[in-house]
Image (cartoon, rainbow, N blue to C red; front, side, top):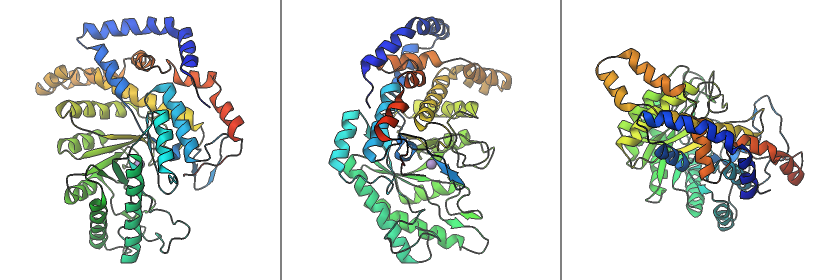
Length: 425
Ligand SMILES: [Mn+2]
């Protein structure tokens, strides 16, 4: 299925008066306060977040999975779905591939299809947390940190293969998330596990083309419940520092213990030039992988506040943005539309924080004023700015409404059937 520009234009036309009625007073209010709304809209238009190839199908838990209909059956159909999403919101022009769930058997063909759909290849993801058919060694007791060097060698070779696939597609980064760790005290020697991991990552790092980055993800628990080899940003940063200039930390919002101050971590990693990637999701308890912004939109804005400050002080800062969520109940495409919108709302809110005034409040210890400034931005309905950014880029004023009006899922079910099964979680 393809959505045409004309279909979007005609649906936008029906809503344009309502849109302008909302946009005009917001622009006026912001401009009176000295904001350049044209610049905010331009920045929203240029913001692109990558969609992971495993997010187009219905996710599940270890208890079960309840697939929906019309799921993409191949990498090509996954790219088509991302194309549909990007046509609607003009902010999802990148894909993050997971190997081996989505191996590009025909890299040239895959690249041509992505070009045609206006999709770029962001970071590629390796997988040494599952055993694959035909592999000699098992990752049951770890991969890059394993006590047996043959298992480590297999995991290293896999990561190098992922880099080679990515290079053929135009990716420029490898994301490494390690499930390695231990579930019981005494199971692992912490120092040896760290040292093996560092050596393994060094070998992978050396295999990367010169213009590539390595993004090191961390997670405090799960699947291991006593210790993880890379449990926190400190360990990730330590490894990134030891590896070299092209190694960075990657922050996944769900990979923190409850109540961790993620915005502070983001600020510090940017301060030392080591923030390389970002995985968006939301959670109440742990790595819940819920829709971005569904539970903690204020935290998301506070994170974007730090990002906006970091980008202002280092315009060359390049961060790989990706949604990393699992859609167990919702239509995956609807969930992704909501996630991208939540990210852009937080970004737009951060762009209307009066940073000069905030700095004055901070320097005069005016705690009350500082809170007022942040919450004023958070309580501003910035959605008309998002709608305008999308419209100016030929996207939909209301991506979710348009998706439903055009009956996209019904069309996909007709094309692909009701009982399709997507590779992934
Ligand atoms: Mn992640």
